[in-house]
Image 1 (cartoon, rainbow, N blue to C red):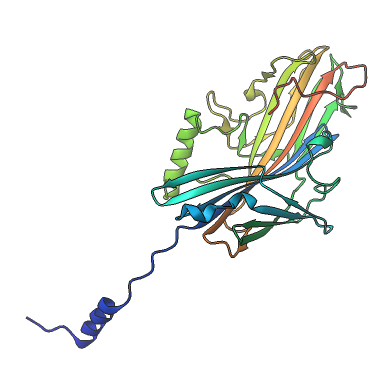
Image 2 (image 1 turned 135 degrees about the horizontal axis):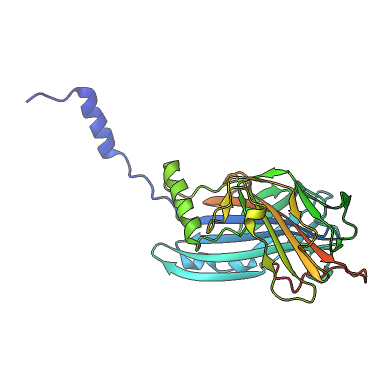
Length: 327
């Protein structure tokens, strides 16, 4: 039997006598941010920053006082607001950790000032907005910005539609900017949709890591027709405006506008509703930093335009969306 080389014996001795590595802490702060930049007929703007934060601790007692967490938002002009959680939930220890989930919302709505919880014009600049989240004495900071990258042009007889009022008996053409968009959906992504789930699984397997890989950016383009007096709106046949549309699938690689309506497709009292949205998923863990243990984060930015076009409306009133089933 041959003897081990001296160097190998020394290495084995060092490994045997080295102190065991410390077990990593299960403490974690996971921050998920959703930005919404919504415009309705260009006369109403809603900007919103929603933050969901999940705090994990091995010892439940460490979560005492988590509801006292605070979010500070600083606008580009230097004004700041401090917000307490809109909602919070404690989940007792399961397996290794107990968790608390905190929800914060920062919102400014020009059409419904009572909904806003920040000073006037606080969110109307694009940014950057500095976010500072203090949880159980630990701090996470980051910054986010809004964007205006989508546009819509509405034409009848090659003239812009005036005050969002359509004239029956006249062709309508709807152009988007960008003109070519994709991937594009005509319904919202829903993991309960079998076809969408299968497509996601196939994409994940092709990626080699067996995790769903978010597409970014993605677009939603949807056209519905309803009646001014309210009631259910009907989805226009997606094959009319989604290139490569397949029945039972909600996604296409891309499409190109304009969308055209013939002169006899809508009548007095009809409402044509266009919903156009872009969603961007930022790279994970690229926005927040700080001394919070186990800090991880993600940011999703939604930019959405909704146009409600009333046919032969003669009273000059702003179109209402309450009864049109817009979520």
